Length: 150
Image (cartoon, rainbow, N blue to C red):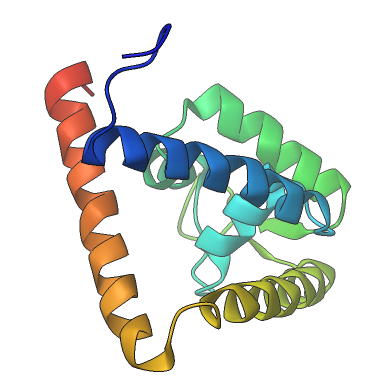
């Protein structure tokens, strides 16, 4: 054991890798046109389904006041549009043409970066790696809720 760190082991290795990934990911995100919150909002809306603020808050797992600020910023930036269906008292938002174009551009860049990173793994191992990564992330999510609470 070193000062403030546990002994080496699989969990500690996972923590080190996740920390490095987080740092690298922030660098990649800095090169995107969209801010992180804008990207998450457009990622959710990419299916073309209009959503209310309440639905967005639930699906993004954020406070409605936070989503309200993010939605207003995205409206001001022209990334989304707001409308009110005739049969509903609530406004809904969808991706604007500009928002869709910027999202597609960012996703093309991000896809290229991830494809280059995946090329570091032998082609025959990539599917297995991604399946294991998805399983790990799901396990991490479940473990964090069990340990830390919702």
